[in-house]
Amino acid sequence: MVVHFPVALMLTGLAFEVAAVVRRHAGLARVALLLIALGFAAALVAVVTGLTNPEVRAVQHTLSVTPPSEPGTRALFLQRLERIRVHQRLAYGVLVTGALALLVRLWRTRGVLWTAASVVSGAALAAAVIATGFAGGRLAR
Amino acid sequence: MLERGPLRWRLVATGLLAAVAAAAAAALAAVPPGSSGAPAGVASGQPDLRIVGRSLTAVGERYDLARDRVSCALCHTRLSADPFELTSYGRDYRELLFRDNPGARSIFDASFAEIRAAVAATSRTGLDSDGDGYDNDLELRFGSVPGDAASHPSVPVRVLERYRRILVAGERDGTLEELRLAGAGRRPDCADADGDGVVDCLETLFGFDPASGSSVPAARGGRLALYRAALAKAGVPEARPGG
Image (cartoon, rainbow over all chains, first blue to last red; front, top):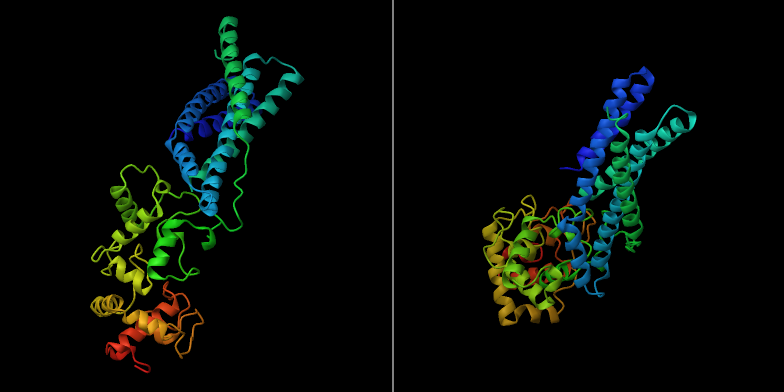
């Protein structure tokens, strides 16, 4: 289950980053950046596996062949498809926020603006990862 | 060091990250908007029988099941989240449907006639999906769930099989239709202690608990009343009024 890797790596990386700031520890900061980068790579793999998931095609095919005379059955599959799409949008959001968070961390120097950018991008990434994990969990239930 | 690598390395990484971010943003914008448009109750754990599909309709028609006492759970174990997980009865039905219609990629590729044929095949005598000793036809005919081993009437199998033989003979020789036309499908004059909509004399005869609202046959009360009349006419003592 590749989807667990980005969640675990990115959230642990962000937690390490907080610990590095609190303890003023450069080693922890390097580990944090490495974990976030690995999590981002895992997120790329997870998105690819999600896009090639045969269930999506099965749901779309089922919808295409379900006659309008069965609105309830269509509604069930439409609801499933909508849940898949919500998860899909959030997963793309993880890639965008993850890339921005890494860019900030690659180029940041000392300064209030860079610190603010680090905090905002880290918080956005954490929120995106948690929301995507929650939406994925709803799909699996 | 990852954070302070050579400038060229950081530029390459920046280019790659920017490309991924741009591609992901474009893909995000391209995901089609939409709403499920699901009617109230759908996929919320309370399936509404007015909107379910042809398979349940075919089973309901064949066995005269009460619409408020059967649900998609007859075949699906996880209706809300995943329509593809099936009960043992659902698996048998699906297997037979696709065996007889190898070109179908989905259940929705099958015609209603093919669905009816698969329902009939799943009810052939002796096929017992849940392995509780009561075959699928016997369970559906008298109102229990064929995909749940814990759901079966308390009446012994041999007694219900005897009832079935009488009823099948009655369907063939027209006795059941005669009885129906004579009004035998009306509600018998018995109490309904648990208020579940099926009177006590019918619940007792077919092996359900007349004191428990959760023990109720899925078959319509009118159908069971007709069966009771046919059994009484055939001389089954338990089916006679007061029997």
